[in-house]
Length: 125
Image (cartoon, rainbow, N blue to C red; front, side, top):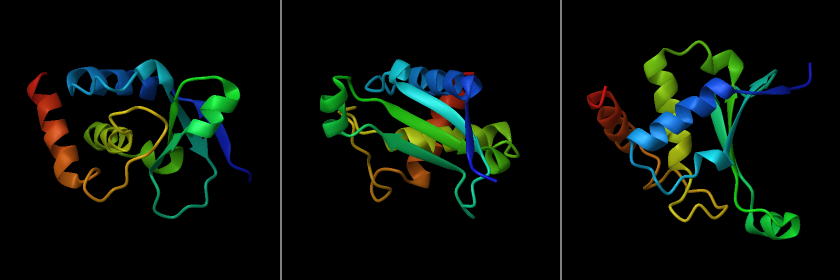
């Protein structure tokens, strides 16, 4: 079965909430698109973050955009807390320049950073 994608409005709402409450003002939620995929053969992946590289931005005459894809078979089974942490994880891959690059895990996307941001979010509720 080929992989299929569908827009994930609920995730886009979650992205907006996390960006606002976590103070990630460098992220433009209008340029972060979210999709659910089904049929992926990957074994351990729950979600992925994609960017629109600078050369594509120039070629298409469009600003940077990011896509967060969640693998429906794994993501949808998670608790709400774990879903929020996955979204935080993917947002941490977006650099402060919001220019089309991606941050690596090492030094940026860590469990410590994810839990710190999640802690700030739940303290605001």
